[in-house]
Length: 533
Image (cartoon, rainbow, N blue to C red; front, side, top):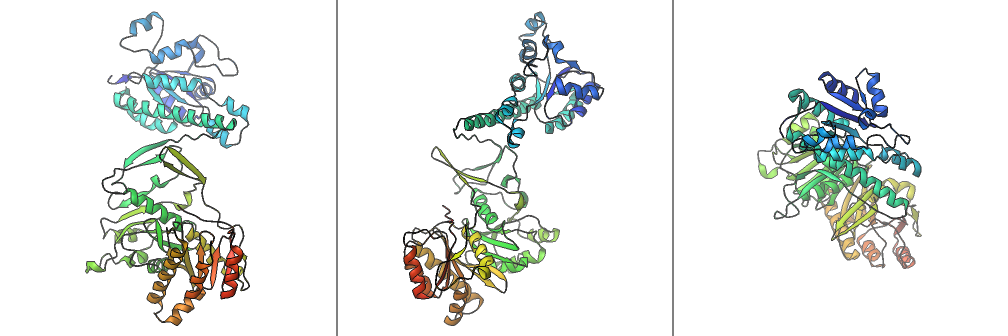
């Protein structure tokens, strides 16, 4: 079970990427190559000596290629125990095959291309999985490669040992079984759907421990989607402490808050909710406005940007201040890129986690939650509104306010329900002035949002009642769901709010609209709810 020399190899691949260099390496070292169909023709065209598989199986390829590799001679050459079964194999004229290189019919590719059912059936590989599983089962003596990405590592191993070590074969064994499992899972779910049954099979890989779970006594891990889609697992860590479960959750909220920003967008996140979001033409200004949304809650927060981070921006945190009490403490900063100077400055805080992620490559179409033995699936919330329609006597100007409303709707999508957001425009800059999140009572959410908006106004413009009334009148209050009663309107109007956007759809819409008309409030409906539980 040490190094196994590779004297005989079977190559049968659908994806022929880099198969010629691999075969050339084997052939140059005296390895006999057995091959099939298109693979054999490609190798022969490269002047590589090949033994046609029918010579080994003693049967022709048949039934339009459905029968090629399934045979007593092939499977025996892969499966027999080289120590216990050697005499029997000799009696049966079975020569060992030491290496299988096989990737499977492109079922996933033809499925994605919209192939018809008959084409899908023809792209279900039978012989390939059989060979792969046989080789993997007998990994003590046989090496198996299932993707072109594995060839470079194999060639390095082969050139070093003229064969493979036990540890290498054991690693390839695990990759092979995962490869066939994922292949069969996709076929199984597709065939179920063809019969009108919904079926989901997940596959995740490369599990890595996190610092801890939601609490320090809980262990946690992060896994990467085996399908290879770009994901949070592809984050590049520049520096800082190990990531925790909560860091991942909060970072997700931060990313969702900025990734659809149309300009320089920054979000300050605490416990998965934005305590500040801003969109401007200047990155530093966006950070300053987002931080001002709730500077107290910003302590220990997650900061996200949708554009590469500059030195001027991160100097806002004052990380090199001799007076440590004046340094702003944040847990994570994440962006698509960081300049070299920005990274150097951030290194003043060794524990600060600095993460890099291409936000444009995150394209989730579905959302899932696994709990107590069930799985929930839904479409991602990617629709802002059905239509914007003013519903009150005092018209809410859609053309004038639409960019600000869209900014507010993007914000409300990321806030836990029941939620209220109050957004405003300051000289072309959009910011979240206040929000109320996660409240069972929508009236309380409204009150919290107004109180936070007042704090923002006092800190930025002054505490006079006239200033507070002026800025609240210019703001837009956005609700994630309809108002079931007029009490929210009465509270908002009493505090100076004059513009409201909500989905509508309540049986009491007429009463709510009538209250707006009585109190001089403009209201528009979106016809799309944005609950986030």
